[in-house]
Amino acid sequence: MHRSNNLAHLFNYLDEKTVKQLCNTSKLATKVSRVLRGIPGVADKWIRIEYVDNWINRFPRLTHINIKGYDERINDYIHLFRQSLIKLNLACTNVTDVSALGGVHTLNLSFTGVTDVSSLGGVHTLDLSFCTGVTDVSALGGVHTLYLYGCTGIRDVSALGRVKRFNLSWCNSYINT
Image (cartoon, rainbow, N blue to C red):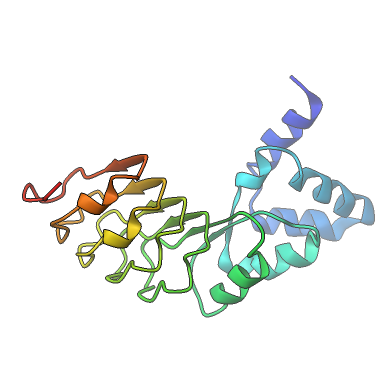
């Protein structure tokens, strides 16, 4: 196994607090942690939203970020990384207004109170599992991968013909295709 792959494997087991402590130990450790962020596989680490500012400060050339959680700063982060790949995991949060999230690459909104998804047609991978308030998915024809598990309010998916992969498990049996 290649040495950088070993480092990436180890880094995936570190939480944000441990990485922060590592970065504070020495300049060398800070340089090592910056290198680690560039290793394939490490970019898939999810960062809780309360630690995003710390990660941005520690890794100034950060181009990809996977954010877990929601607060009022989310739109600032989306704007900051607008030219980059960004993934948001907002599952089980109190988010309801998703109008500014259309530029996100991967978006998990499962188990939220979201009802209007008309602005999310540009999202690559969208998870709306168990968003029972969603009724109109006609604007989501441009989504590549769409998860609609348990979306019992959806009645018509005829506009989703261009979606490459989607799943309607546990939805109503009265869906018009």
